[in-house]
Amino acid sequence: MKWLLLALVVVPGTVGDVLMSIGMKRHGEIEDFGLRNLLSLLWDMVRNPYLITGIVAMAVSFFALMALLSVAQLSFAVPATASSYLVETALAKYVLKEDIDAARWAGACLVSIGVVLASL
Amino acid sequence: MDRFLRHKTLVVSLVVIASNAFGNYTLTRGMRDVGSTVSISPLPYIHAMLDPWVVAGVVLLAIWLITRLALLSWADLSYVIMVTSTAYVLSAVLAKVFLGERISLIRWTGIVLISLGAFIVARTFPSTAPEPEETEE
Image 1 (cartoon, rainbow over the protein chains, first blue to last red):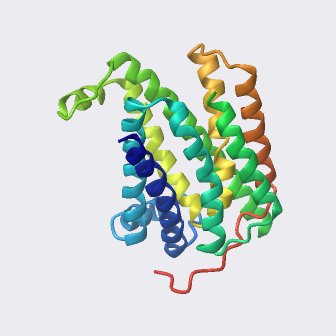
Image 2 (image 1 turned 120 degrees about the horizontal axis):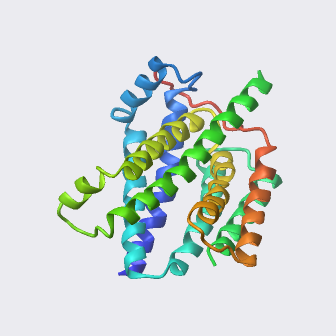
């Protein structure tokens, strides 16, 4: 049960972030937070399939984490959530074609280790 | 233009980080008042929504979602996740200051590593991905 919940935290969480990133790049750059831009973003959140799927995936991940924390210790969930920084960086490189230089990899490693330590 | 993009990225990142940390804090505070609500019935959740701390938490997390999406409209995912991970740092500080939680040396070490990682990534250029081929509007 807890392994299933862990998978439901990690997989929708990382995939959801990638989908939201694709969805927002397609939406186009938000120049400022004027009412018009906010309404256009809210409208896209119910119409853009990448954003809809991404937000649903994020919600699944959030509720799976709540459920996981009710059946397992936080220390069981943390290594997986910490490693998601590295997994998402790899997905950003190969799926989103972002330029991941040494600084980005170094940052991902430091943040992952930091998240583990900060939860102890 | 690049300077403007960097400034905009910095300001919106700070809003994402602050709304995340303060949102978590106010929600935690509110759920303490309300008590545990693990239920299938919607009633306890509706009751929880009447607590001002919970309302503040929900509003802040809505701001977090909108500003994070806005940030992703121009910045790389690999940039956004690392820079906004400093919300962990701010959350820990809030928990210490307002909820009186003790932070051990090893947790401080983790907090320093997260800050360092976020700082290194924040210095890279926020947007490196190619433009999508078909854009709407």
